[in-house]
Image (tube, rainbow, N blue to C red; front, top):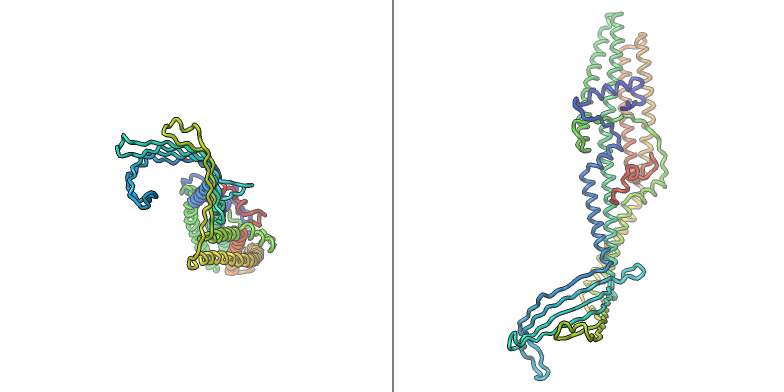
Length: 512
């Protein structure tokens, strides 16, 4: 296992110190030692996350709905049966001979089969909302006479024909349904990306909490080492001058406090690591090792380029564009409600009627029909107009959201860049201060050995090094979180110069 080196804090003895810390914090029966990085934590979370599984199932469900809608563009074969239809009822019917209504007794037995192959009419890849079908209708019709079964009058009928149906002056329901399903799938995939990036952000928060605790272990252990060295120097001085025995006690008090902080840091790390293992679905006996290397790598970010990434890679604007298109479809559908519409139906085929079944395919005659059916609204008390207005208002609201979001994206990214630059400069400065504090401690040790400074001055320099290291950690974590915030706003990793989802190899998760 590679031993990481904490720049500016551990020095030459850093590797040995970190090995001792990890050995002390490791369970006795650990199954495996897992060096944990942010990328590794994300990968493990993706593999075992129930949330990711649910998101994948949601996408697959929406994709199935889209397949169902697209299947409507293909031929459909179906059969309708009446097996049998028995009617023995009386009804009023007009008798033109008697010029009056009379009660007619109907006593029929009907067996009927309709078979059809129905295909939407598509011109140049565009669904016309019309249908062309091949049909065959065969039935057996029996009218019982007064003599009952003995007076049974049986007729067979066969017709095979082509039917063309075309709605006119109506919204294209087939096209709109397919487009709506496509938009739903795209929106589901964009929501998947948003949830994944939010998960990345949550995992990063947990990872940097663990990072902070790992850093504190090293920091406090470094302080213990410095105080142990100071205690040895104080003991040497007391052997030379017994009147300065209090200096040993002063160092021992600070050393005891520092050792207690090391123990507390180890305990906190174990608890945080246990929570992280639960989140990553790892065995509790495993040991997580975090490399606490808070080195600041300056990143140059161009505002206009970042805004472009925020608009193109971030799903927010595309989701609003999808909502706008869905609102436009709703407006189109609303215009078709209770409006003038017509249906054209044309059929042509061959038919035969005969009392014998085996004669049905002989001597057929031509049959055809043409029908144009229209619906003309006259007065609906403004119902249709109110519906259209309501859908248009929804469309306008979405357009306002888009305009507002475009402005917010630019403002938020500009603020995030400024915040990142401030934290970056502060972290670089604190890193330099930490190196100086470390040099001061080394110089103070030499000065105390030679008697140029007191033990309080030495303890003060060691304490100042701890304060500086903690301040550096605070600014470094602020820098990392500012960078994460900018990544969340732009969906782009500026450190590696690539889209954020591609960095974690999440591009293909939605396209299962």
